[in-house]
Structures are given as C-alpha cells and as structure tokens.
Length: 299
Image 1 (cartoon, rainbow, N blue to C red):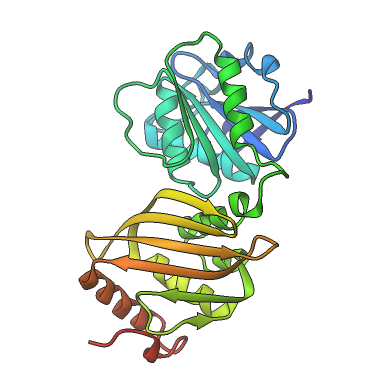
Image 2: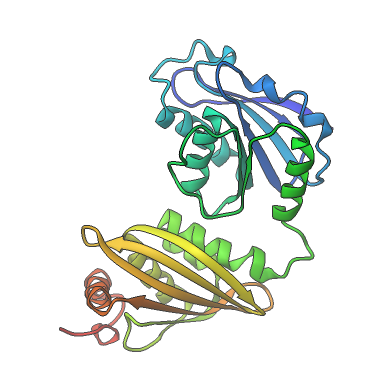
C-alpha cells in the first residue's frame, strides 16, 4: 500500500492530510477532538476493500494544525475538508467521528453529486444537515473495520453495475448541485429530448436542453432528491424543492439512458399547479432569445 503526504492550501494554516493507496473512490476520514488525523492509523491497514484511496485530514486546531488561524467552527472545518475533497477530483465517502461526524454530513450534503456515502461514528446529538445518500451510523467500535469494508463494497463503483446506477443519475444530481449548463451537457446524448409539465412542447438537442436545465436549476432556492428507483434504462427520481421566496414544489423526474449511459430523454413533472405555472413563466423570462415563448405556459 502506498503512502504519501500532501498539503492543500486552505485558509491561513493550510490543510494537512495523508493519502494511502489508490482507487477511483476516496474515503475521507475526519477525527473528533481532542484527537488528530492519526486517530485512524490503526484502522487504515486492516481495511480490505480494493480500489479505494484513504485520506486522513487534520482539522483546524488539532495537533497537526495548531498554527492555523481563523475561527475553529463547523463552517471553517467544512470549508477546509471541502477544499481537499474538491482537489481529489473523484467520488468519495466521508467518515466522521464525533464532531467530525457533523462536519462529514455537511461536506457530503453540499456535494450530493460526488458523495457516494456517509459514515457517522458516535455522532453527537441530532443530525443537522440531511444527506440523502447511503449512510452508515456506528455507535460501537467493535468490528467497525468489517462494517466499513462491507459499506464501501456496496457503494464503490463497479464495472458490473449497469450505467443507469453509476452514470446519468449521478451526473444529473451533480449538475443541479453546480447549476452549470455544461455539467448537464456532459450527462446528455446529442439528441436528448426534454419533456416537462412546465413546457407546452418538448425541447430537443443537447445545447437547447442544457440551456433550459441551467436556467431551471437557477430558479430553485433548494432542491433535495428524496427517492430513486431504477428499472432497466429508466431512472425515477422523486424530489422536493423551494423557489420564489420559499414556495414549495415537488415532483418526479424520469431519465432514460442509451447504451453508453447518456440521457436521451428526460421527463420532469412538477406540482402543484400554481407553482408550476409560476416556474414556467420564470423559465420563459430567463430563456428569452434562447427558447421560443411558445414553449411555455402563458398567463
């Protein structure tokens, strides 16, 4: 197993972290207090899941980073950890112990498209930021390594999984998280077709559909995917959102993929009707000159 030490500059003191192994999935470990990143040293060698990289981070104020300046609060911790996770550039599972569990949930919740899972070890009190993906909660240290290996095996990307479980739904969530038209385009086939209750007729083609989805994601003030079901080439996503100063919307999205795992058809259904009509009007205004007004509800 390889072992390297890296530094990612975040804030005045830098973020200290150690990397072990290689893989297409990063497992990021966050300690509690008064511990430091070395609290995981005994665990790392006994983990057996292949194809994962282990990353241990020292939080601000720990013995690794006593020189770091700035407030040692949850926002600072999450920003520091997020800078490392983003620099890794791969899907990740974040493991947090005690206070680190609170930080872990925040980091995962802010990156729903790349967070493959969340592990909370002796989490303190109530969970504050709900992460909708796979979650393991541990209150007993006995056999923790075995439980963690089982969890990582379940969430690790595998060539045996069909594209519908690893490609387009993940890209769809990530695009909403970044609100980027280009991120949507990466998930689409060139001839993708978008149908929606907010539209009076379909929108066709990657460039036009990515523009609509980029505009739509910017209207939402919050968006949470609550359930997912896969049936062959189709993925069904239930979601809840707010817009227009807290107006609640709910709906179902159906994504249909081709053999390469790219989305060829997306059907988005909003409710209730009043919020739907307001949403359609907002899209019409944002897409003026890009998509014709005849595609949207009038009045």
